[in-house]
Length: 272
Picture 1 (cartoon, rainbow, N blue to C red):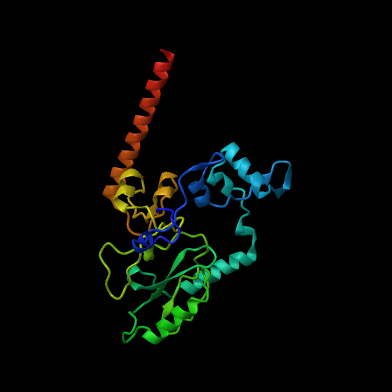
Picture 2: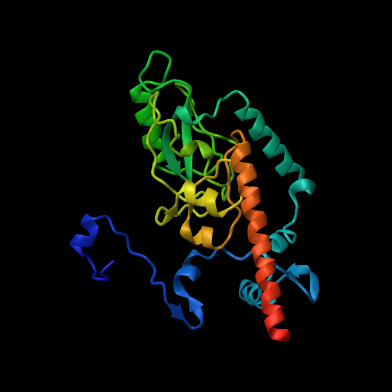
């Protein structure tokens, strides 16, 4: 990006405005923009309350509190009977549908979290058993007025969404283009990070499998930022590749051994 306002060249090659990768007051500006909102932290001096957002940020940074540790502070929904009922009910609504990648007909962004969600139908649009073009286009227009993850849509004509999905959940695995190719009326989708929903600097599957141990599963695409932060790689629910699982386990073990060996060498040099 040339940083010139209204540059027609950048617009023509579809380059978007990006936050500069620079340090400001001790913080990386790009990482600050991409940083997730900090989870609540209990007040150490008042167990009935949480720290204010600005104090929580300082506490997390100074104490080096991990995301997994922060999750422990979140109140569980197990004691919320209404939330439990809502989750169970949404799962029952999904039981009658088949969520397959080949049945993806359209996508819709969530107005709350920004995630792209999938719209399915068992049969292709404008076929004998599928939704008509009129019904499909009407639904797309209606969704332009707003959509939130898990909300119902008008299922006339056989179009449906996954009701149990919630804001902040990973991008659905069915969103990504199948390796076998696009067929049966399935749409082509743009690569997107399954974690933060970024569309640029996407790490490809081969690199993820080579550098991260995903247990032989099929990893979903993530961006370079999430990859470098060592976030857990979301995977599809497909069959585990045993050969890849064994190879990744060997690579992980070798890296651990190399790390311990190098640590021992450094320790020996210091003692010497």
